[in-house]
Image 1 (cartoon, helix red, strand yellow):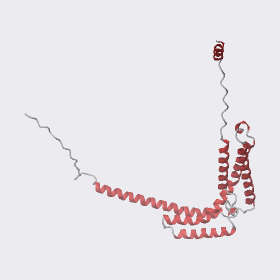
Image 2 (spheres, rainbow, N blue to C red):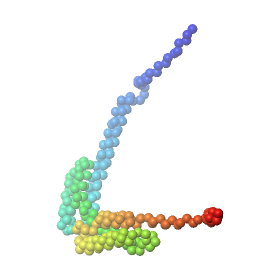
Image 3 (cartoon, rainbow, N blue to C red):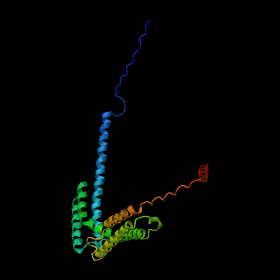
Image 4 (tube, rainbow, N blue to C red):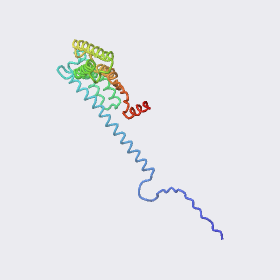
Length: 243
């Protein structure tokens, strides 16, 4: 008797609950979508409130800071202070008339005010960092010029004309810095500075790169000593001559 093999076929069945406690899959998805929409709406409301508060805080803070004798007082002229305060007052009136505006509108309004306020803040920041950068540049000049003028054993192998180029670059940098400092001393703090920190940083990096490129030149390898003939080999040669 020939036995027949049994074949088993598997088919996925979709089971839909009916007459049982709980919500259907479609209903659950609908509730999930509704909850996500509520959360998104709440985020938008919170972010809109934050942007509105940003505008209000900026108005109050900058109005105080640009006042004569305050932190930004020296960095804005009387005419610009008057114009900026007028813009802040106008923005404040607008804000209280538009408490239900959109987030994008508040962002745009803050950007408008910063067009006037950012240059004032920038001049103040430049002034606070200028002396520190001047000292950094002077330190760079002193260090590289000393290395080039007194090379010693560490840099004595470098050609004199290469070392002289470092000294020349240091002198040029020092002259530039001195001239800019003198010009800066004649400019009012509310005017655009001529000695800017970004320029000093760039020139500082350029000098360091140029000097390091020269000073990193490796020392030449010491000359090889002639190989000494071993006594044994010498003796063998003498015996050969005797024969």
